[in-house]
Image (cartoon, rainbow, N blue to C red; front, top):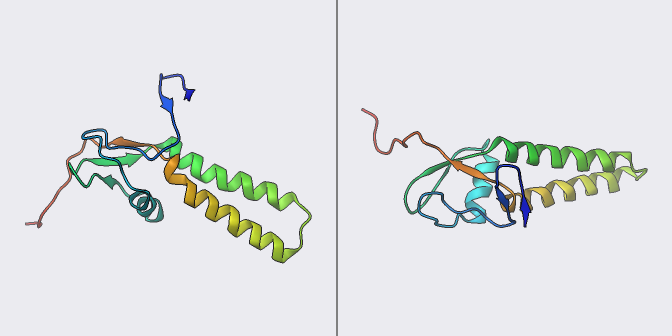
Length: 114
């Protein structure tokens, strides 16, 4: 268990809803990442959660740093492309375990406009 300055506890694991403590699924978090960090909505209480800026930076920097390290290696082109794809996919697959969301205080509009 790692502790951060604001007494935040950092554990590897998929986050739960801050309102009803329902666990989000890996698939739900993956969908929010793929579509430009759209809000994550709890399937039980409909509370909306927004990804934190720290999580966005962690995702972007982890890919950038790993790709930079592998770009320094003297590898053949085909192997370099394979390594880049593997690194990208491994970060994408593991990201839901690192992503942190905060409850959005704005209410969600459900239903028809009019």
